[in-house]
Image 1 (cartoon, one colour):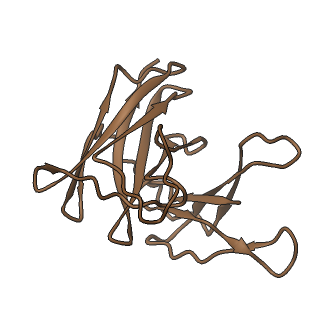
Image 2 (image 1 turned 180 degrees about the horizontal axis):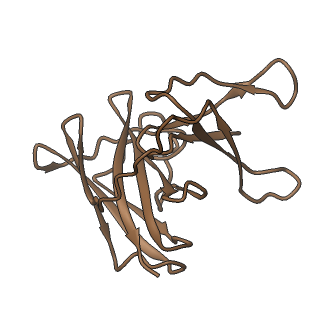
Length: 192
C-alpha cells in the first residue's frame, strides 16, 4: 500500500521500504538504518483512493550534516554488485521531456543471468533521484509481472523513462537474487 523511497543528500545511500500497518487506522511503521549521519529525504509513493493517481509526499528526517554533501555526477551505465554485472542501455539520448526506452542486462561470469526473483510484485524496481534533491522516479519493468514467488526474470529488463528536467539523475535498480535485495547504481545526464 505504501512505498517509502529514502536517500541521503549525496544520493549514495538509498533504501526502498514498505511500512506495515500500525495500531491506529492510517498509521504505518517501519525500521530504517541509515549508513550516513545527517538528514535523509523520504518520498512516500502512494495512490489515494479518492483520485486513483500516483502521488509522492515528501518529508525530511534527521539533522543536516555540517558539510554540504557532494554528489558524484559521473554518468554510469555499467555496475557490478555482488558478482553480477549490470549494463544499462538507452535507445537514444536522455532528453528532458522526451520518452526513452531503457534496458538493463544482467550477467554472471559473462553469461546472461535469468534468475531474478520477484521483489515487491516485479522483477525489478528502478528509482531515480534528481541532483536538485526535489524529484523522484519510480519505474517497474515493462511486460508481464511475476504471479508466483518461484517465477524468475531476466536476463534483460525493459523500462520506459521520461525525465522531466535536464541535469544529473542517480538511478538505483533494485533486484532480488537468492533471497537478497541488491541495489544497483547508475547515473544519467539528461540534456535540455
